[in-house]
Image 1 (cartoon, rainbow, N blue to C red):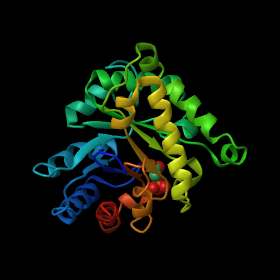
Image 2 (cartoon, rainbow, N blue to C red):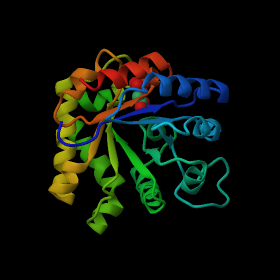
Image 3 (tube, rainbow, N blue to C red):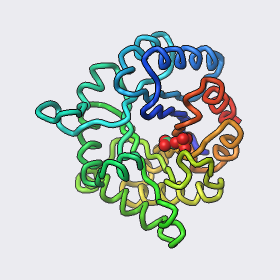
Image 4 (cartoon, protein in one colour):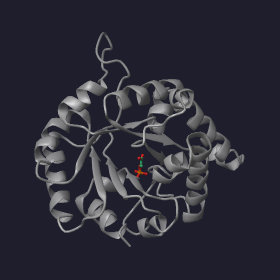
Length: 256
Ligand code: PGA
């Protein structure tokens, strides 16, 4: 890994009550007290953001949302705006997660709008991309990644500038919640491709600075071999971020 500060992010998805969320984050904060040198982020469900923010005071752990709408406010029943995320204390937002794309029909165009809105608000977007099993088996992985990057970063491509804070998460759909992790070699190949794409569209400096996370069944016992890969700068963790011991284990083991 180059000179990029690692980031371990927990995506709690639609899990945990407010009390459970606060208790989890308190245990995580306690467990990583002596571990510095990396960024840690938790992305609770919307209902727990405010309480978790309070629990995170005086800790280095950052807070993120799992999704947002691109408009600032208005008649969008059931939606949350980026402004609402910053208001509650979020610094990051996950955008274009495969569950949003596949279960809720989110298009690259919608993800692109959300990224632009997030960047304007100073939120750090975590753009998720990744292929399904059928796409991998047809040998389409890199083509799918390219399509998702091109569509989800259309505004940045038009402006010929990318937010230097933007983070990409490579999450092969077949590895999410299945217990099947991409091999370090498979993950590295995808990460190297993403960095190359960033380099050819936004230049070497942007490519070298960009953090690219791996996501998909990350656990304490597979994180270190993933982190040993040159282009893997951290992880976006689902299931294993819901238990303090496994999330703390991932953070500790990611430091090699
Ligand atoms: P998982 O989920 O770690 O449970 O596979 C990862 C994600 O969806 O971000």
